[in-house]
Image 1: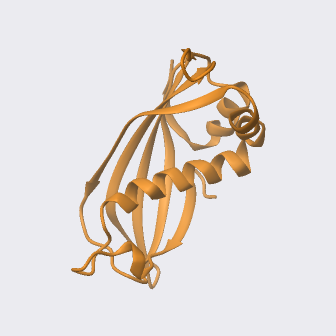
Image 2: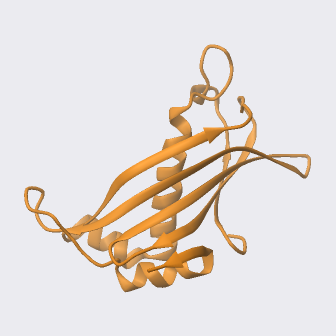
Length: 147
């Protein structure tokens, strides 16, 4: 964890590359999910418990990723998540994908994700407020507009 962003460090494996040798694009979105799960586990465990054992749901509304450079097997990667916007029921995240080599950092991609907090059974979910524990956990990683 560093000031301003929440971080996932990752070493790229062969299984994440395609036949040309660079990382297959879908893995960038998978890393966003891994980082979000790690954040909940470490920073907002009560929210994770509500997701797993109660009726809270975090619906992903939108994801994207823009690529600037390629990654290959054994590259060291830092995926950094920041809070961009927080409304009553939604959260927008920004992700920076930074290749780290010999102390030099290179931005290789940038992504975003918007999620909505929902409650209720699967056939009748309704928007709900972002839980207080999650709001508090996100505060140190915010460059956000809070609405």
